[in-house]
Length: 481
Ligand code: ATP
Ligand code: MG
Image 1: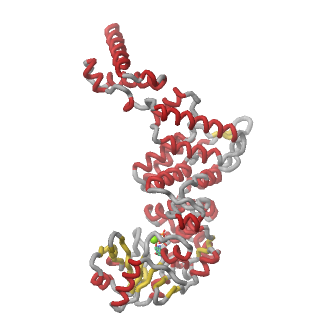
Image 2: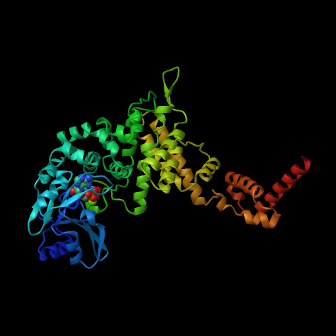
Image 3: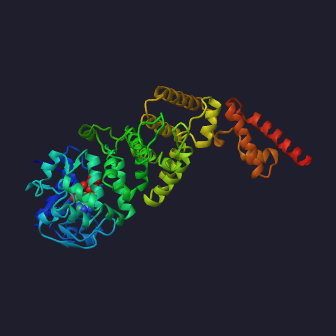
């Protein structure tokens, strides 16, 4: 096995070796290279102690000095160089509470989570694969290094990591490893929200988000996202649906496919059959969409009613789904405000089906904001395609028309917001001698309503005279009362 190490990595390994130490590329980068993916970052493991590493390189950062990690900066790139170590138990988000350095590479590989993540490589020794990681890559298996129960006891996050890697790589979890994950699932309750979030999001954004089903079957979602279990347990006796809420949710998530963060380069596309996301912006949008699909129907179980014909209904579930999404995103997943806002709006409006006339759609656009619509359309299509076949053609035709009207409105440059109105509050205050505040707001809103109905009225002179009239009528009303 030959790995084509990047120049910087060769320099770092060479520098450490020339000083009499051992050094290897290790973990995720070795695994990814073997899989034909382009590694995100190259981590290096070495027999040198942190201070020895520091003394050998000009620019370094003490990333985790106590835990043995020094970041070496070469040009614009950063590389984590970590001393061979044996871990104590894990307490915080990134590091075990205590570590012991060791001169022995094999000891360092033994503390790693899965066999596919426990291989090291340098040009001198070739591949060091003490735990048959190569074989497990060939078989497509996630297998704990050593005794899985012990390994999950040391750090329960590894339970979730097993499913995350399975979802990213399309691998299955080896039997003993899965049994231990099942048996110890409750211990995931002791893991910090941030660590869970990072692994769970990677799973959700992976090429195999249907791994959520395995999380449910193994009782793991019951610990980290019990709301999802309720969805899996809620049938939908309704002609529009063919699956439980949870199964529908899984399919809706799978239908968001355009971009795939697992593939960040053309090489990855080949290895994974996924389309690499074009930009940071695309990756964010992909993330919003997958999260929105996860939450869009989460309110359904609590909204279930069954009518006299035995048909299930879920009236007003988008509102409840939105509230649940907000709480979970903020408090459990600790997402940033922008993510919470976008995802919650998508959840809230996912069932929006406006009457298809341009005036009405302009009103919806002004209410919701035009930026959201391209994402909302993707949510709605993913949703439709995860329902039963019943009326699917009609639903898709409606969707085409809705999107077409939206596009036309934007192409025409129609006014769809207060900002695009041909006059603003200052104009009113200046020309009509209004004091500002409430009255100005009322008039602007009325004018906007008018313009949304007929965009050709968005003309300065006309709007000012209209405002004058409105002002007068308000005065008269006040006088009369
Ligand atoms: P990714 O490509 O998502 O970064 P990765 O394999 O590099 O995947 P990291 O979380 O970056 O995963 O960890 C780097 C390496 O450190 C892993 O490959 C594994 O060898 C080891 N490792 C990370 N977290 C743990 C853990 N909780 N328990 C044991 N080993 C771990
Ligand atoms: Mg990594």
